[in-house]
Image (cartoon, rainbow, N blue to C red; front, side):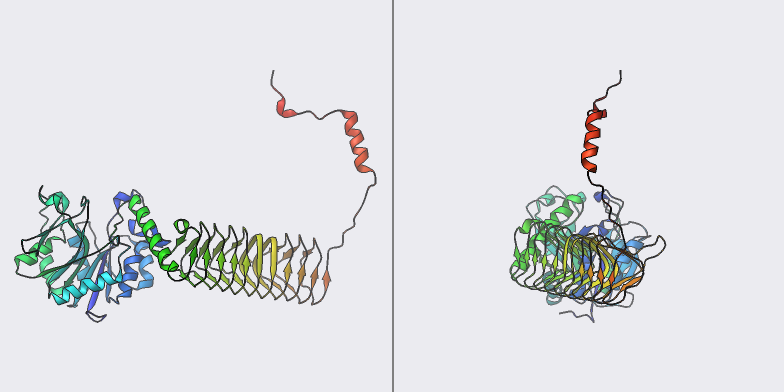
Length: 476
């Protein structure tokens, strides 16, 4: 079996994807919360293919940015002259390499690592010059047909536009995944000619060229839905459904409960512990992790967040780049924005928003609060309607609240400000200066009362008659 020392890979990502009917390149459309292009890159990373080349078109800055975490080399296909030209560009980037090369399109997101291992193993066992991945389908429309001789040997791949009537009935199709020896591929590619309906250089023609040169062509068959290709938005939606089924099935086999798997959206990088319970309409994307025994009630969107053990995320929570320690309760209808760090047993209630907020163990903010650019000490209670006023119109400022502080309802903490441990902020207070530990802080206000005011007002209104309903006026 080829190893990372003699297994390279080329990903073909230069296609314009015109059937998507969008300005965004096809390979940047998202599937399971991740760009389509990342799927073959992760797959090749898993089989330790190195070096890795991504073939891109000109002006592909966004595509290169998505590839950056995988550290590939790039080859540019300046003009769309077909897959043969794209592979040639990729091999040019592998100058001096003479081992085995995997060639993958960027639009087959459901391929398994086992399939690639099998493809390479067949290639080596059969001592083939080129090995192809095929599949038998009920409706081969749109696919290149795999033509074999009477002994079952692969003769050639015929693109659909160039097929004869008899060839159109062939149900074995080319998937678009290949394995070959780099020197042989270079030699065969040099002989490609654009003698086809498209006037392009078809990489698939190397199969017939290899046979004509007396070289062996290997083949192995893919099974199931793993070769579902994304060509248009309907394909993307179909792959989304297939991926969702695959992922939820995996996690249910590992002790995760889904109330309604059909409405759970769990990305490929998410990690779930046993005894996690997930309600309907929950979205978990990015590198989100959920600890053992945690419950997600439903209609939540959680991205790139770490949730500890025995937490309870109630209905309608939005969370991104947040961290929750064990036994945290959030929601309903709360938003945890990037930089939120909640310690053990923290409670964040309904209509509370946090951002760059670090809350120590036992802090409670149960109702209607904004906590931005703030540190809060343990066991502090944040009353309803509290706001950390962190932005002065020019820059952000930080609020520091100590441990065991009681912040009364409808209080405004104007940053930068520090409130010492055990302080008590009276209801309706605007805090503009630092507060010493253990102090009571309040804004003096005089309460005034006018006895009999309501009765007098009602009497005056009764004498004036009913109020005019302007909504019923009509122009004459």
